[in-house]
Image 1 (cartoon, helix red, strand yellow):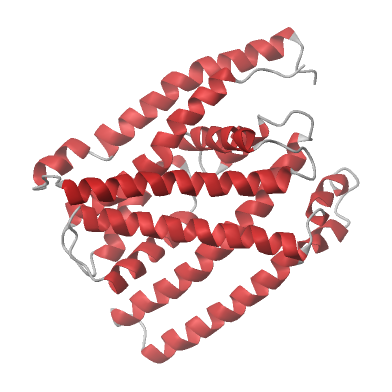
Image 2 (cartoon, helix red, strand yellow):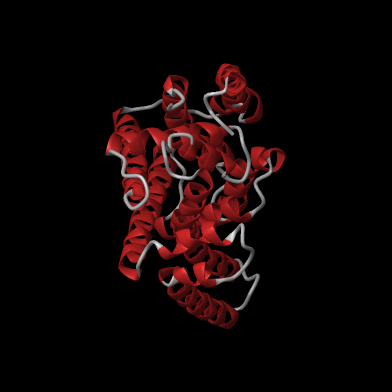
Length: 318
């Protein structure tokens, strides 16, 4: 399909035109109807002081670091197919965040990033993103499962012996997952279908050292996420110990990542999962919700609005 055909240009122009009200409408709905921020602030005695303002500033700086690392990862992966500048990688990543605000199951991330590819096949670009996303999933799943087992043991849902066995099994599964990941070229050797086989050759483009580097960048991003959440918890005055907070945070990330993200489900997951795990340690529900929603605003809403600018400026490459 030729992108220079007038009706294709009209379709893309129409999508860009619709994207603005849809994005702003969805953000408005999330903030004032679903999140009920007005009610939360009204029911919470919250008078920000200089310490809390500093914490929020650090959280915003960590957001910049988070997406900067993800942009480095995307640029690093694309260098073998379609080398891009770091600024180009940032535009692609933030465009993905914009689409991801209004789509389920990370679909927007794929669409937003491949939109900026000039010559490389869009489907192969999507599969390349799968490689990077899989690294993030392995990190999130490994730490999250251990956190879930620890919380379950602390609350006497399972015995300590079962907890230890579960953690041991999780570590073994993690090692197996890591081994399969750094040797992900085995997927390219599968004979699936003549029309599909050329695409899965993407999985043979990276060696073990390069995949280990992608895993390392993903692990750093995960640490940044956890730090942001913890700082917000402290900033909103949630009285919980650091060990309990880290356990609840990592368990929350696990739940948010692996429960199917259909739009209607996702609307309630962010606050519900945070309340579920933090309620074992504190009854400050409003503060916990404010922390969870603030993380969404900093990590997704703000970069999503920036990405919207890049999408509106995007032009079809002839």
